[in-house]
Length: 291
Ligand SMILES: NC(=O)C1=CN([C@@H]2O[C@H](COP(=O)(O)OP(=O)(O)OC[C@H]3O[C@@H](n4cnc5c(N)ncnc54)[C@H](OP(=O)(O)O)[C@@H]3O)[C@@H](O)[C@H]2O)C=CC1
Ligand SMILES: O=C(O)[C@@H]1CCC=N1
Image 1: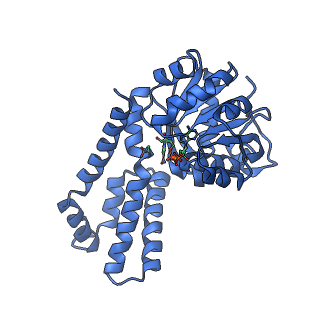
Image 2: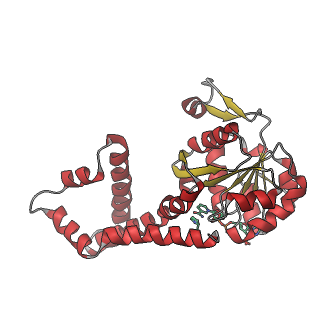
Image 3: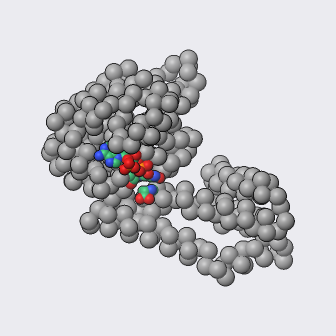
């Protein structure tokens, strides 16, 4: 296995900081050049994990192919060609197309391939069967903040995947955020929380900004304040290690402004709405997997 290399080199600072780069023989392929593939590819290239010149993709949409060519990725004319060119093959099409693209790729798959599926709800046993039985498969549920090096992701390994495969995928995604190894039966919950979660937070940022505008702020100032408030609050939870309830209490003066706002959120069922959103998305992921 020569796709994993731990480096102490400090010639490229982000690699040194992460202590991780893929071996020079690694070639990464994306079947499907959509939003999530772009976020992962740009994230990995941006962190120096692999140069764009060692990435290939294929997509039925010429517009998406152009986007990838725009940052140096080679476009192949078929999914089979991407499989033939790569040793790490990321399946990044919508779940309903996974089987058909694996049919395309299967004749070119060898025991040197590591298959990584990011498709919501498609189970390891199906991926393994569609890829030809003894394929080394890892399922990852990332989210779009891969693009800015801040993904929240989780993975589960298939029956033929090795410890090195798990270390490799963990290492790659660690350079563009955080990744947990979980049992496959938890991936639907991961999808409902962090896979879909950025959309919930974008809604919240938009709504906070609307509130600011309603209270009289210019739109640009309101959006900037809303964005930085969410970013700063997330960083507080992350960096201080304090429980969010304690941090909330520290903002909330007796009889003050914050408790007036918090009271409105509680009356509207804010917490229950977020919990229901995660559960509904997790259930949808479960439905998509046919479980
Ligand atoms: N978006 C997200 O936030 C996340 C997505 N995922 C998973 O990632 C996967 C991709 O999602 P996303 O990037 O949003 O989807 P997109 O629709 O943006 O990307 C998928 C791409 O695959 C193309 N495609 C369709 N059929 C084929 C085919 N036969 N061969 C090659 N390319 C094909 C699509 O073209 P066309 O549009 O013309 O059909 C499209 O460009 C999904 O399985 C999803 O569950 C996981 C985590 C987060
Ligand atoms: O909405 C979806 O189905 C995908 C999976 C997680 C995020 N987007």
